Length: 317
Ligand code: ADP
Ligand code: MG
Image 1 (cartoon, rainbow, N blue to C red):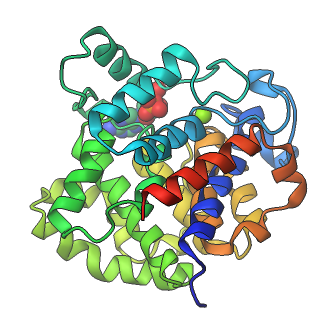
Image 2: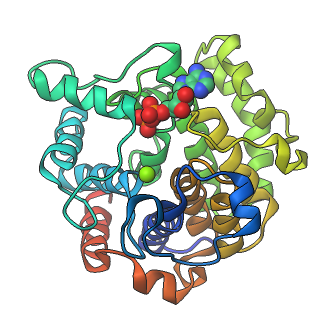
């Protein structure tokens, strides 16, 4: 299909991500078995975090912080400062408070806040710093500096990740996700985007001198076999590799915005983040018109998101 305008794509991506997040918030941490007996079919109120229907969480908040930073004139330090304004001063919260944050994210923001003259690349670099907290907020980079050569593009993505997640695995996950987003933006269908990723990414990762042990972590994605896996083989916890697998699996197995995000949320566990990561891509693929109007109507701070979208569209030109 022919690609829509950059403005329409940006709006669909931000709204698609926030809606996926909000669908998952009321059932976060609940099991997949619970979703089998009581599947999410639309916006719910209360549940896990006692929030009204349409409340998005840290995933959308930090995505908006990155969009805001791009709109203001991007730097990594400014991004770290903006993320701190979210956690410490309630910037980009849906109803004025932060009710959810990942441990790795909180530690990095605390480290930067305690030493604001220090490096904004405050994210942990050890093996167990590989939660999905950078992947869930990376999507605005699909609209910023997309023409950079491979090496500088990967470095930019790694720097943005490293504000909270410094390990190369998080950077690779973010880069693969943004490659899929790039293909969707160019008008490729999900299956075509995935085929192009599996064809190109292994060689690009080797050009980037990514250790083979790290590329191997993405073997189930890069094998080309991901959509053939049974749902029982798909995990939906907080590990970045699992979240990327789960989101891509939903994108590849379903063929509408609502089916894709509901499938992601109904995998259980880290429902808001899986919903957000899948929802951003599904928004890009199917467009804003494919997002059910009643879900959009329930979304917290719709007008502010629209204003942000306009400011970012101007800045990213
Ligand atoms: P965030 O990434 O949003 O800041 P947390 O640090 O709270 O979130 O959560 C990260 C999740 O990812 C935890 O459930 C943790 O067990 C999981 N995780 C992190 N690193 C790894 C790893 N190397 N292997 C498996 N799971 C991991
Ligand atoms: Mg969340």
